[in-house]
Length: 68
Image 1: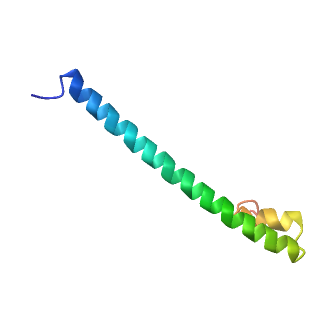
Image 2 (image 1 turned 60 degrees about the vertical axis):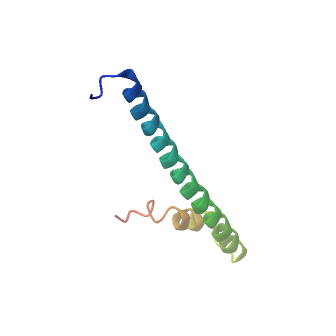
Image 3 (image 1 turned 120 degrees about the horizontal axis):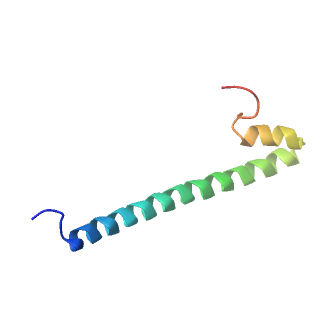
C-alpha cells in the first residue's frame, strides 16, 4: 500500500482541487457581501453630502489616511 499508485494521487489532486474551489467561492462571497454593504453606505453618504474623498477614506477602511 502507499501513495505509489496513480489512482491515489488522482484522488488527492481531486480533493485539493475541490478545496481550492470551496476557498475561492468563500472569498468571492465575502467580496460580494462587502461590496454590497459599501454600495449602500456610499449611497447614504452621498445623500448626506459627503465628498468623494471622504467616501473613499471611509470605504478603504482608513488605509489611505496614513494610519497603521
